[in-house]
Length: 97
Image (tube, rainbow, N blue to C red; front, side, top):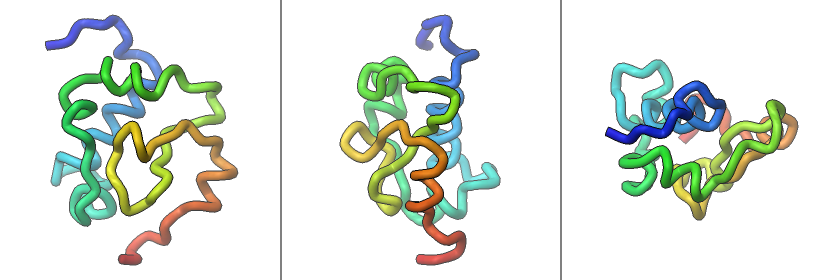
């Protein structure tokens, strides 16, 4: 088990949320993520520190984790920290395929 002392950070919460949405069928967001094939890279799934090394710290409280391709995985190549206004422009309509 990784020990890093960062479990109370926004970055850790973002990683945990993405990990749960893509791997836990009991998660309320599963149907819009893991249930439709959205995955997390094996490196990120295995290690918060790998996620943090790729993403760096969140720029501010106005930013959250976003996938550039809404149908693509949570991975270094597809994720950025993005502000809410930009995220709403890129939002996939719930229930769409």
